[in-house]
Each structure stands twice: as C-alpha cells, then as structure tokens.
Length: 214
Length: 105
Image (cartoon, rainbow over all chains, first blue to last red; front, side, top):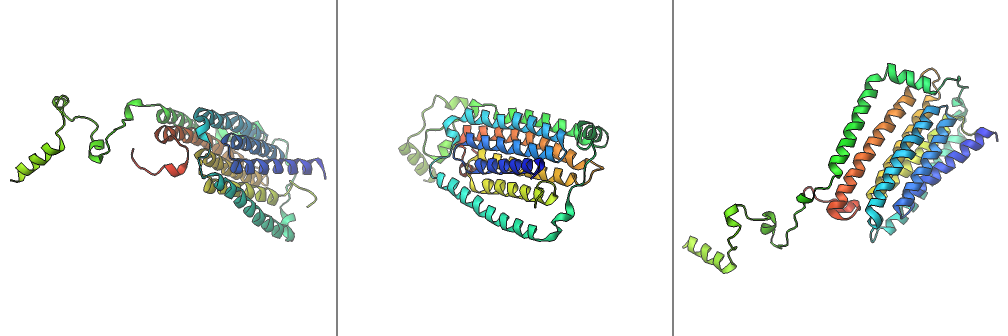
C-alpha cells in the first residue's frame, strides 16, 4: 500500500460515508453535514486526479456556499425542517435501500475486478501542468469564453429569481373563513357599493329564486 | 488490486455508488431539503466521473471545464431550489414533498 492507495481508500470511504449520512439521517442538519463530508472526500479525489483547480472550486463553491445555504434554510425553517409523522419509517427504508444497492454494486464491482481487462486503463503519469489553474483558465477564456459568460448571466438570473421567489408577499395570502366554496372564491364584495350592504339570508335568496321562476 | 486509485474503473465504480445513493435518497426521502441534497450528491458523482475520464486524456482539459460548468449550474439550481422551498413552506407550513399537490393556491 503506497501513500496514493491509502489516500484513495480514505477519500472514497469518507465520500461514501457522507453520502450514506446524507440520505439516511433523520435530521436535515445532519444530512447537510453528510453532504459536506462527501464534498470534502470528492475534493480529495480531485486532487488525486490532478485537478487541483477543481478541488479548490469544489471546496469554495460547495462547502463554502451551497452547504451554508442549506444550513441557512434549515435554520430559517427551524424544527419544521425535520420529517413529520410517518416519515421515520421512510428514512429506515432509505437505509435498507441504500444497503441493498450497495450489495448489488459490490457484486457488480467484484464481477468487474474478476475480469482481467481492468488493468488496461491504468492512468499514465500526468505532466506537471495538467489540471492547474493556468491550464483550465487558458481553456476557459479562449475556447469556452462564451459559455463562461453565459454562466455568469445564469448565476445573476438565478440569484434575482431566488430573491423574487423567496420574498414574502403578505397581501397574497387571503384566508377565507367561510366553509362555502363559492364564498371562498370571492373574498370580498365585487363592487364598492356592495361593501355596506348585508348579504341576503338564505330565506331571502330562496324567496327571490321562487319569485324569479314564478 | 494492489494499486487503488490509479485505474479509471475504480473511480467509475465509486461514482456509480455515489450516484446510486443520491438516486435512492431522492426517490425514498420525502423531505424536500434532503431531496435537494441528494440531487447535489448525484451532480457530484457525475463531476467525479468527468474528471476521472479527463485524467485519461492528458492533452486536453475539456472534462474538467465541463465539471466547472456543472458546479456553476448546481450552485444556481440550489439557490432557486431553496427559494422555492421557502415559498412552499410559507404556503403549506411543511417541507414534505407529499404536500405539494396543488397547482394553484
């Protein structure tokens, strides 16, 4: 076991543990911590794959922004962010399902390992600049400059849209006390002059309907 | 198997396991927040796969740049998704996706 083997083993076990924690824990704040653990593990694997720039971006964007956003929302919702009644059985089902899928994946992996062509795709030794900030930046600002600028536009639109969606609009919520569906459809008088007039009683409405027919 | 981490198949298997876990979490859990985290898990698995395949092609970095764009799109998606979760919670006082059964309020 060289240092690289131990590194890969530890990082992949950390990532898988975090993923299990994300989907199987009852409290969403623990799920967020599990997502953070997975992200750190995958950033370590990026380092192993000669993607230093992406490892840094992964830590900055995911661990620094996305997980923090999740934690903000969980804290904003408070105790209501957790599962309601009857969902704890579903969390247990998630654990069992994950375990079953893991068994299947282990079987598939054992089948793959048992075949000899696994050695055909060993990584070659990478040159020094592979995955560096210079390399990725050169590609990003030459060939990919239009998608890059479009990504900035996407981020701005997403932030403005998020503010527009999440902003509280108290005047929109109109709670009607009436049990009648027709009365709930019209929240108030349609005309201003009807505001002071009392609504007709049931007997008056029946008399009016009878008069209209007769 | 005495050299872990130097074969692309090992990364493919790991990414497949992570994607499967995210898929199971999205399908089984009913908490919208956990479902969004499961989506992030799946996106991360795809990123890992792209970077691992890019490691095989030493003369270009297109896979890593593609993973970079996926990270940007995922950040935007999380911002909008969590805003929708907040609006949904304001409407229903719950974050269970079973409650989302109306087109209009």
